[in-house]
Image 1 (cartoon, rainbow, N blue to C red):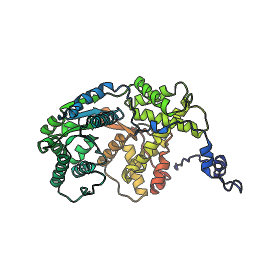
Image 2 (image 1 turned 45 degrees about the horizontal axis):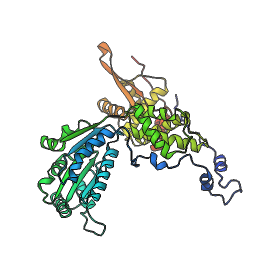
Image 3 (image 1 turned 90 degrees about the horizontal axis):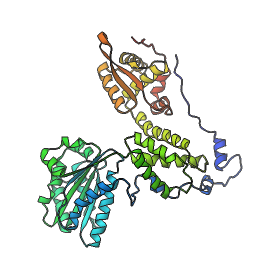
Image 4 (image 1 turned 120 degrees about the horizontal axis):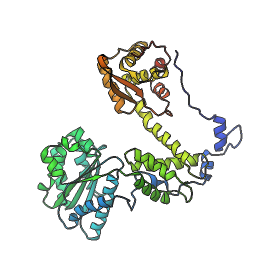
Length: 441
């Protein structure tokens, strides 16, 4: 059987350009596409409020966590050293937002009381080595007129640390060092940085410092030296996932501030909250759904946001998240995923490892590529399973041993074959050839 391609249904150039009011058939030569778009009445009053970067003044359902962090950091206003802290919780549970909220209030109060309090925020996914973290903290202490930055690279790490200590002492005060996504840093660079930062106060004479680590991984401290663990985890706070009712409150608050009155229909906020609650109570997911749903309604020229806009938004978000993952797979992983899709296209479900390998091996032959061993293919299957592109469940087959049952689990609105062929021209050959297939045992 020859593979078939799926195609996106793009609107015709003529129809779409007429709709938007651009040049069409000699008419409206001076019409700019943005004139029509700007003339539309937006459903938003302030879209920024629905973005992750927005820091609300009121944070529903995080009052206890705010109070605990503030109770610790108030020591900075008394000239004392706050305890080091670790904040745990799943993505979208409000850890970073709460920390920034409290540290901003702390700095504001410090200015009123004429206390030198300096919060320093480090995203450890972007700044992910000991050298870069230390230099980032040191350079963040420079005044606008100062130019003696620690270089991006080139100094010994101990020199960078000594320069950081010197700058902190020369400015005095209390420093609150926030390490966001600290687990990423520990896995990549080890715990030497944390050892140095949690030991800062033994080197400082005129200044004081505390460290707040923020982690999505409840078990990352298992990677730490016991001495670092005891110093860093003086206070731990767990951020529980939001439930559907809590997410409703958050969305209502943000919706009132960001979307025009009477635009959001009954049930829209509840549906966004329900979808996000299924994703481990992720507030970011809920906000994205509400924002993209409103954008969908606006693009379609609708005056109200309805539940079908939410479902359209969910499909778009899923596709936007998964397409780069598929396109960025290494060649061998693309071939294994293609073998799953080809088996399914030919009517197989619960594909066995042998059936998958047989099609994969033929695909390699078509491309004149050496095929990997079944053992290495098992590792690729596990990786694709971890990425959420397939499911691979182990099933006992009695005296025949154990076997995996493999199925794709990519949303139906994602055109996987099209993505693979667009990312790698060789995949077109893979999907357009014939394959012998094993029958299931």
